[in-house]
Amino acid sequence: MLPDLRWNIDYNISALVLLLIVVSGFFARKNLPLRLNRIYRNLLLLSLGSVLFDTMTVFLISWHQLFPQSLITAVNLIYLLCVNAIPPVLMQFLLCFCSMFMRLPVFPVIDTEFAMPGGFCRLSFRLFRF
Image (tube, rainbow, N blue to C red):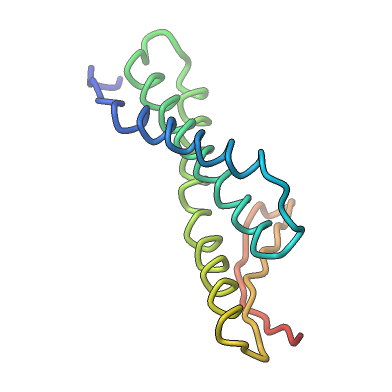
């Protein structure tokens, strides 16, 4: 049985408002289909998903008597997956952004491969030449 805890979601609400402003500004403009724009879009969507699932997790845990434990676990798992997916995408964004200015002949890219039977995610670095 979970203890009766109350979380403060004021920071989640402010983060959600700011992210919605940035996301609406990004999708309202016409963007070139560059690698940098695609990575930035993925980063925004992961951040938005992280904030939404964090808020849902806080709500579900605060009212844990009304919801089954499996739903609380599933929403929390999706939140943790979103949070843990942000650093590799952010690193890929920074490498892509920096390579525009440094004119590197070799660009490291994070390659994510999902294997369905095992259910694991493998991150590896590969070098692409332009």
